[in-house]
Amino acid sequence: MSQSANHHVLSHSLVDHCITRLRAENTPVHEFHQLLQIVAMVLASECTRDLATRQVEVRTPLELTSGVRVSSRIGLVPVLRAGLGMEPAFRQILPTASVHHIGIRRDEATAQPMAYYDLRTEQPPPDLAIVLDPMLATGGSACAAVQMLQDWGVAEIRMAAIIAAPEGLKKMAESCPDVRIFTAALDRELNQNSYICPGLGDAGDRLFGTV
View 1 (cartoon, rainbow, N blue to C red):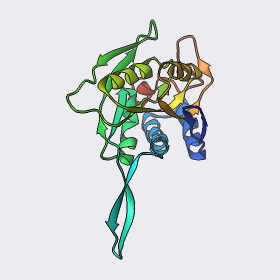
View 2 (cartoon, rainbow, N blue to C red):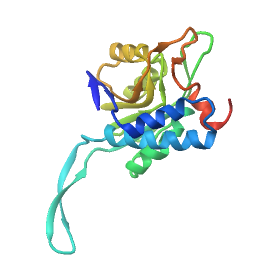
View 3 (cartoon, rainbow, N blue to C red):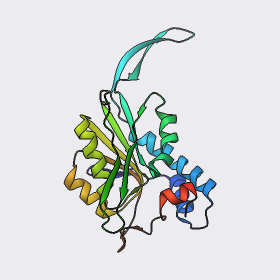
View 4 (spheres, helix red, strand yellow):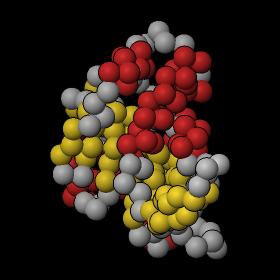
C-alpha cells in the first residue's frame, strides 16, 4: 500500500483487476456489486490493520495461551446511498461494529453537499468511525459527514473510498487533516460537472441499476 500523509492507496493486483471491470461501462449491475464487495473487503482489511487491541488469555485444545482482542468500539458510517454497497464487506470484517447511516446528496447545480438524514442518536459515539463512500470527488459530502461525526463526539474518524480525486483529497486535507483516508485508486481530476475522471460513473446508479 502506497501512501502520502494521511492518504493510503491500495497496491494489489486483484484490486487493480476489479477496478478495471468497475470502470467498464458494460459491466452489469450484479457483477458491479460483486466487484465492489471484493475491493471493499481488501479496503476493510487495510483500514483496520492497526486497530487498538488488548491482551487476553485463551485456552486452545492443547493449552492456555495469550492473544489479543480489538479494544475499540467501532462504528461503520455508510453515506447513503452508494455507501450501502460497501457496508456488507466491512461488516464481514467487523461483525460486531455498529452501523450509523448518514444521508447526504450533492446539489447538482452547485455541487455542494445537502444533508437529508441526521445521524443524531442518544447512543454514545463509537471510539472509531469509518466513513464508507465509494467516490471521494469534491470532498464536500465527506467533510460534511466528518463534521456530523465530530459533533456527535467521535474521537477518531477514518474514511474508505473506492476511487478518489485529487480535489477531494485536498479539501479533506485542509478541512479535516486528522482523518485517515484509504482508497483503492487515485484518479486524474474532476470534470466540469464535478465527476471523477476517468472514474466509473455514478456509483449509486450502477450499484442499484438506476442508470
